[in-house]
Image 1 (tube, helix red, strand yellow):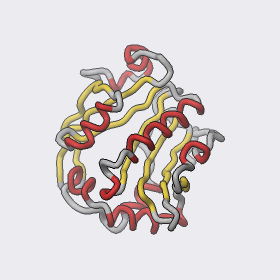
Image 2 (tube, one colour):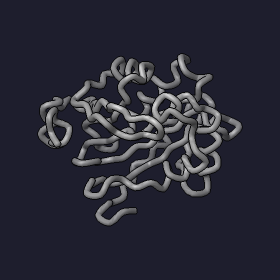
Image 3 (cartoon, rainbow, N blue to C red):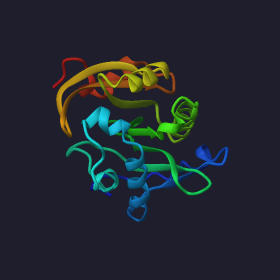
Length: 204
């Protein structure tokens, strides 16, 4: 855990166990499981990076660090597994990123065969309930402009664009990222922007 980060005891398990699925926290021992999931579901990586996941993609997802100077309490890499133990979805979630009460969704992937089934919406609802129960007031994320399926999903879930960051190199592509947020506990986006100044339009 990085210096200055503090652990939170909030467990996701009660919120994701349902309909034959269970949640696993992915650490070093489960990197191969996550890599198999990435390899089997290339659509996200092709859309965002212009190439399939590399052989070290899961290792980076689990062990990669946040930018220097970004405070947070904890990073989870969670897999949603079926009865056989294989992943049908995964998410990277960071609590109290940049400000207390702001939870960030770094990556949210559902297996291609399950897209359109309602699984993504169900998992997001469970993620929101878990985050809210653990003290989150807002959810934050970045979605690549032009990734139409993802843009529609997050907008339909109530996320609102705050600003755009242009010229971000991702694999073989240079993307524009739409920074979006959603209040969970009745707070306004103006309240959010007062806490997270870097998400204000025009901020550096």
